[in-house]
Length: 410
Image 1 (cartoon, helix red, strand yellow):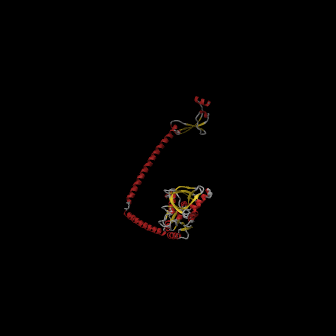
Image 2 (cartoon, one colour):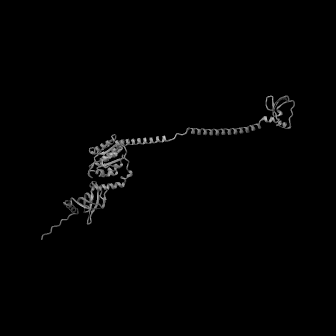
Image 3 (cartoon, rainbow, N blue to C red):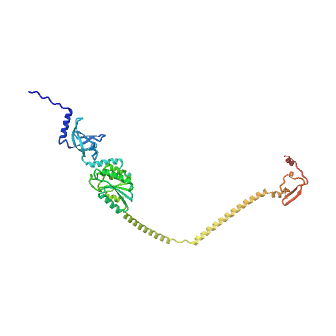
């Protein structure tokens, strides 16, 4: 026997690379669909998703890179049953094989429908659909802003319906794509432009009918938030009557169609004029009925007896005159009594009253009252004023009493 050839020794890296090549070159493993339940879901700060896909008998580690996760219309959640499209490869650093997920589809419900439900639930929890936050649509706007495609039938329908109902209303188009990947961003910018312009009373956002994929731009979260942030009241008009989008829930008013939105945003002037005419006719008839009733009532009223009225007025006047005369007499008597009392008091202090009792008033030649003998000298003239006249005399002798002396010495 010859010597056995020496066995080849491989490094861990070589074997790991070999196994990785085998896995990636396998026709089944390099592109497959695999179903299971998601668990241990974690999101890396870079946006990558790491989770485990399992069933009753086994589990496999999975990773979805940030670029693929961004393309997902819905969010992966623990416990969700999905079908994942991807490939199997080896993560050489740990020596573990894992599934590199490129796309996922929920089991039992479409991806778009699931994304719709998730977005709806999330925004509802934030209060974006609350009825108390809905604003009232103006009754008779002078200007309507419309966010839709400039080339579609929607803008023509809105103009036709609005102008038919109210020829004076102004309609301003803020163009935006309503389908495709660029549509959500353009719709958001158009809504913002309408608000910056600020001259519209109401804003219609919408498009015509189509599949869920066609209407998807109006299910995007950023479109919903732009509608919610609009300072102008918003009417959503997306698709047909049976179509519902997130925009319908967040808008201040949902219209089943774009044409219906134009009707909701305007007042039918012809109908209003007809209504006013009918109300005018009703008022005229009611006024005529009231006038006829008042005329009959007036004719049925008996005229008053003016003789009785005059007699009553005369009696009232006579009573008033009698009361006035009595009041005047009473006041005159009261004033006479007061005058008599005052006269008696004056008479009591009058100098004439003193003279009537035998007293006299002495005055000198100058007419000054003499109250003391010391005021007069022998030979001075004096006058005695009595009740009934005046006596004139000359002082021939002057005698001073003890009281007068004492007073003169003071």
